[in-house]
Length: 397
Image 1 (tube, rainbow, N blue to C red):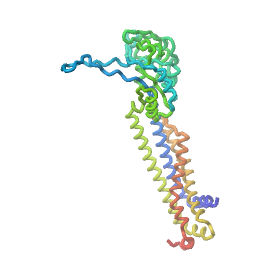
Image 2 (spheres, rainbow, N blue to C red; image 1 turned 180 degrees about the horizontal axis):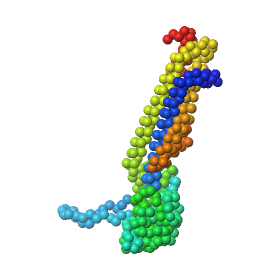
Image 3 (cartoon, helix red, strand yellow; image 1 turned 135 degrees about the vertical axis):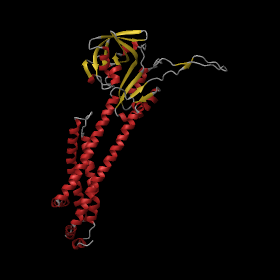
Image 4 (cartoon, helix red, strand yellow; image 1 turned 90 degrees about the vertical axis):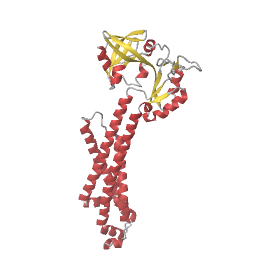
């Protein structure tokens, strides 16, 4: 422990220099923690807002292509193209597809559902809605409606229906009120049992969630579904898993990453910006430590020469300055993490998302700080270890 004792003694003797470099390390690590916490919080918020109301992976048959109503070889005439009705192609053997999706590595939840457009009426109020029918237990693992309920209860049985806040306001309906829902020539009377606010105005104003059987009957898809939704353990692996699911099922599969290319580009740009900020901060910290320890080597040439003359090994001299780098890194990481966390709490009240300094971030800051301190101290330490004892005592260059 001789190297550690000497390192601590040198730091105490040069208090001013030690405090200055410690302040620099603290500020650098505080910036590292603060920026990282903000970017991570922003990314989590963006993903929650985006994926809170949609599946990570969607499996659904392709739409039927438009067909020409008139065709005749060798005859030139204008022809009319009529697109097929949306989602009219049946999902063949969808139960088997559900089992194959569930068996795919990385998939944590699967929900077969039927969805389609309809009109909701209550009195004179009328609104276009998206009818979503699914099993209640399966759906809640894809879209966490129960957590976002503001009134009523999460229940999808019989003629139950759950709607968003905006749709309930437009229809002038509350929990317990009946509404009429019409799709084509089919009509059902459903009763609102819950109202949710999922933080997405489109979903709040359009979704009408009911049981799978109700939706199948209303949309004319008895015994059929329109798509299979799935969630994965790692959202950034969704595209790879989607390709695997498509290979297993033979049905076109789309991941959230394909549907939200702009968001993904933004997240990657944020990651790149954060990395550059971290690199520049750590470079500043490393240069500060290296410069102060280099000056310390020059100032303590005589002491280093005496230590070498009385038999202190090069390894101990090297260890003295490496220990100084470790101590700067440890104390700077602790103080910097504390300052960064406090700064995050101060602005969290005015931010639109949570800023949380996670244990993983603190451990990363500690590891980075100590590694930076050791690397910055290495060159001055090596220079000190290579000093010739006689020349160092005489003060020769």
